[in-house]
Image (cartoon, rainbow, N blue to C red; front, side, top):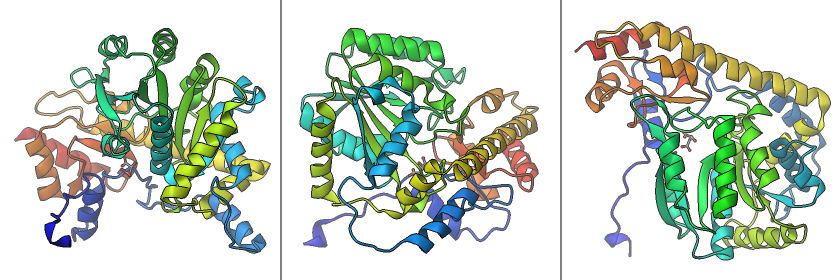
Length: 398
Ligand code: LMR
């Protein structure tokens, strides 16, 4: 039976991660997958996570099944984190959230529920986007349409083109948006732009599907949810996929959520039952461990304050690395402008060099950057910044 199968190409991000691990060079630098690294180049267990995990292991009395929707406390606390506890949608009973295996699982559950609700809905995806968005969401059966998002020349959101394309989106179609820390560009919508897209969604009747995987890594936990909260208060319906991989550092624990904002208080339980039936048909139940840790941290004042401080540290370190890199490569032979790197938000920015230059960085210098030239700025530290800048300058000068 398997004779007819051909080997699949490697994933553009995870394949790079594997290649980096195999590279024996000591000076190699990993700017590939979106995984946080500290000043020592390590991806540490966050302090608050470690404390919650210790407490959890001490207190746990069972490993029995948890249920299809996961932990109810986690679901409520994640919803509060996304929307803010005072959000009117919560008081109105119009929101519901379900624990999922990571942010990818959240996207998939969201997509499947939408497909059941409206099989004719198309999904509009901004270009560029996370390389796995189209394979992951497209394989749930969506017809994918594209809208322009980013101007590679001035390194800003190409908002006029984006709005022009969204003006053509018909009622009932879905529009994928990044809640914050746009992956791969690092360029987010500003408040005015969020407002304009929200008004357009109201006017046209399209429904946003917001992927928020980096809450807290852009401007702050509340600040990064500004657009999402605006949409939740203005629009009748919204689907949100969120992840605890980055802001809790729980990558391998696969901890995410799909949240639905519905137009009245009767719908959330129905929508949740649909999401649960899809989960049951695919993976049955989400893994419990990460969600129990998140739930404990969000509920405990001291742990929560400690976690928030760590998220602030992560964000500030990445911002500092953005500035170091920009300063280090600004005076270059080609007079190429890299100032966008210091201005953008979250883990990623495009370096914006040619394919040949990128290949040379990898082959000659052991510097691993995704093919689109997307860099994970969290892979930079004071020990590798000089080598990184020298290598980029060498590649640019040829
Ligand atoms: C990334 O964009 O690098 C991360 O979200 C990891 C992944 O799964 O692609």
